[in-house]
Every structure is written in structure tokens, then in C-alpha cells.
Length: 89
Image (cartoon, rainbow, N blue to C red; front, side, top):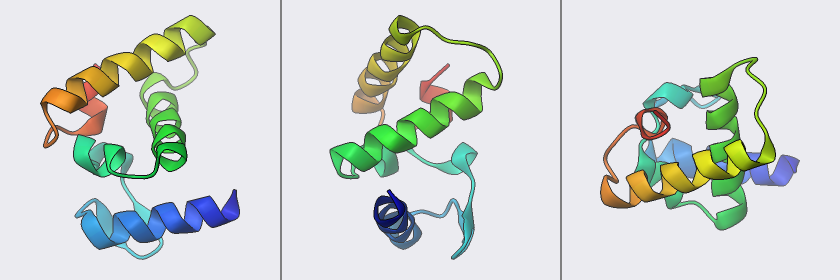
């Protein structure tokens, strides 16, 4: 898991203006392309982080999580430059 996070951080640092420096980044500034261009495991992990960030403390059923992922995938597929957080709305 730590290795995946390091790879994710490195991949995003190279391509993302969302990174303020090497140790932090803003989920609110990631584009759909940046999320979807990662390896599947890393993309799903980051999508989970985005959903958690967007929903906060609101509980979600597995069906709601699946629906959020599928909706984000569809929206991002059509709008790669869109902010990933906006694709969850």
C-alpha cells in the first residue's frame, strides 16, 4: 500500500498542477485525466479518496459507492479536463 501511494504521488507530481509541493496536493484540483490515467488500482484508490472527500461523514451503501464510481467514470470519459470533484456532483 505504501508503495502504491508513493507511485501515485510521484505520478501526480509529474503531471498535476494540483501539487503545491512534493509532499502535498489538493484533491479539489485533480482533473479527470489525472485520475483516470493512473493504473487501475491507483485510480480506484484515488477515486475512493475523492468520494470520501466529497461525501464527508455521510454514510454510503455499497450500491451508492458503485453508482458514484460509475457516474464519475462516465462523466470523466466525456470530459477529461473536468475537475474530478466536479465529476462526482
